[in-house]
Image 1: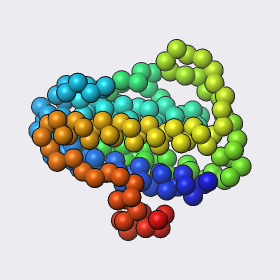
Image 2: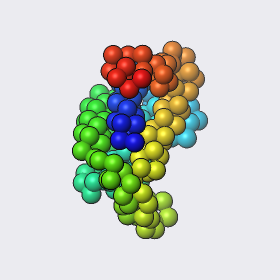
Image 3: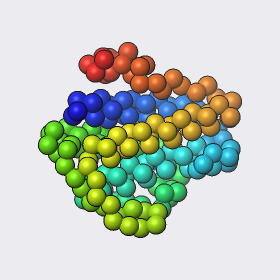
Image 4: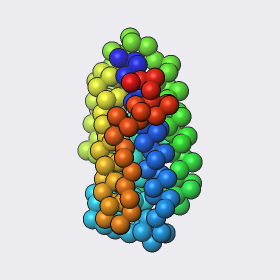
Length: 170
């Protein structure tokens, strides 16, 4: 199971890099344009993915800054947001590398952001959610690129498996 999560963390970093490359090609007004997506714009969507990752990593590790709102804007400028994204992706990879199978079967307890309540659950299903959530919102960012007339990149996991970094997981 650990190898699966190592793969997902590596895929996450790869997909985020490609998505941020595509977002960098947008005009400044397009990056912040409300296109009707759940978090309105590319800026809002990319920030939300980082916000959610920080919330989950704080829950998992007890460390780091976790924004209090799911729609918080960590950085409005794409270059600063990208640096924060890259740091968070490295943090996720490093943390997963330190886990063992027993850790993955263990439980952890946290307080939810929306309608605060205490939840206790196993780590592995929560990690699955972390990576699924990222993929879900990258799909929304992909749609935003399409709406703005940009060429959305291929982000499928199978494409990652065809890269040098992904072949070790294929």
